[in-house]
Image (cartoon, rainbow over all chains, first blue to last red; front, top):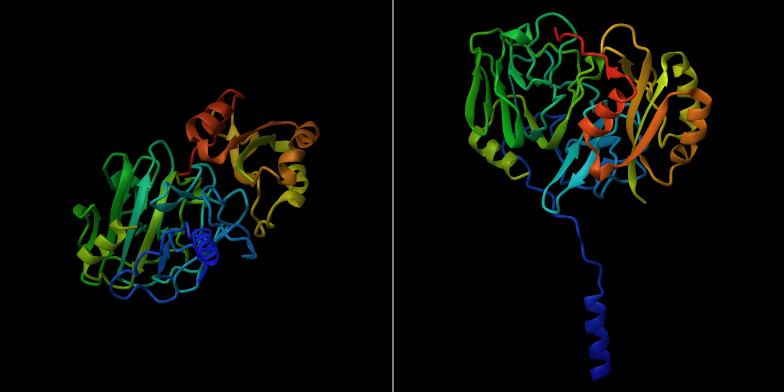
Length: 247
Length: 111
């Protein structure tokens, strides 16, 4: 090999395309719910700017119309205006809503009718307005883990006034909601038990949707969502918590 | 190609016309029954909406951004654009609306 050809090979190597995206995070432990399981914002290529999924959302501030979870289920914003943004600080990736009108929803809540379920989120709730609503009921008794504008975390009761207030969390937290057929109904923040409404009858009797932000009630979501995993029954919670903490 | 937040409102009476006017500029059509100007606004934050607002992302090259001045002239209301990376809910939405005498209509109670 001549000096010239060696130089050219070194130069070509130095100019090769370098991936700038981080590798997708590991899959969560256990067996998430089939059909609508896991959204990991770092799993680029699963996020789309348009409803036809022709334009990928892969760079900071790209709007996200569709997020496809690990099971291939699309979580869709119903309009361009309702799209959250893909954001990154160079290390972590998340969806960020505007606190005004953003929301995503899948076709169906896979836990509807179930007496048990477990969800672990990695998120940051920005103070001031909005929240993440999950398992929102259409009417009647509300077995609803949700975080609203006043930063309630609430489960299994029928009115917000029944719920404890935990204060704003303007930093990243790992949040868990757990229910099972024996009547366990608990929430955890960063591994600490926050609410225990064990003894309430729990059925995921929602209106068939899981929402980030509740547009129908004008409770917009204001915060970051790094990812989440949804299970039919609680897995090894410590392992699931650890997984979410790495998102 | 940067992403901007388009922040705008139209008088309630102009809502139907506004939906038709912005539809050609959307990256994807809305789902049936979903409006672009979907946030109810009123002077007090309660009661019957007097205006409807939107806060949504658009590429700075999008026709929607270019069309905003003519849409304002035709429909009334007002608009601003904000770089997506520097958007502030309190400053760019709530304070901007307040300066125009508007507040988001308070949420309905969760049941």
